[in-house]
Image (cartoon, rainbow, N blue to C red; front, side, top):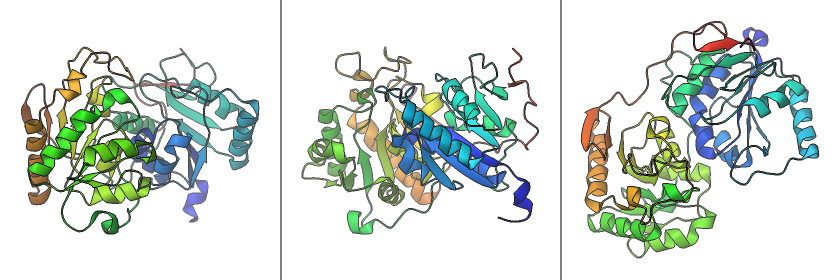
Length: 386
């Protein structure tokens, strides 16, 4: 710690849900770390691996919150007491609670107050009473990355000069012993939410089509997806199902020409290592908030399907048409375009299947404005005054 850093706060960032959510919090975490003498991340069990990859994190704390997830942990007095003791012992001065647009930060805010955290900020649609020192109002239709950066900025934390605000992880390992040295495309067919993935049959046909078109395909998946990855890989692709942890998967993705993946954590991991993404995006959650961030990508999937905005975990429409209706030709065209883009440095672009139009985009968001004192914009509310 330098002499100047001794006056900086000890800070905590809270993001309690999935690995993908933690990766999307990365730019905000870097902003907090820039203005802090010590930065810890409090996450759930599913987010630990991602948290350990984020630059700027000095310590990862873990709590399985009973208000998070489809099958949340039971309320536990011992677990809550253990968390309060861990937070109290670290004497945090400031905390940011990061939540998605449909979640409430208030359960976490209550625990932070009980643990003696000096000052807490969060986006909150609900009246926070005395639980928040800065009640921040999220801008409409904001991507999750940008919303977190907005909160960090209005809490007094800004990205350092030269930081473009993209997703980022620590340097991934060389995974050539796993993949071989020849160029390849990663295909990640699974997702924790079934509605956000192709059916196994459709995924297997797509892998075969990619292989027949001359691409070397590497299929990835977790330990619980061995049957799926074996079926998708067949005899024409390399099956790495269950053979990579998150850090190794980052290495596999970093060396890929393109990643073909649904709206799930590996899509954000691909973005964090700079790999273009063919995003098989079911509209059960809005793409404007969750699409791949800061890298060239093509968005495939009917974004106006009947399931749009439903947050359904299983497709409510027979045949899963929003994703399984995507043709092989569309996937191949997207892989070719993104692969050429990566090789020759064309402008980043995005494409949405519904419009079938390609438009130039900057690929990376504009750098947030300079920092200012907390509570200084119309989008924020100091304390609990409403």
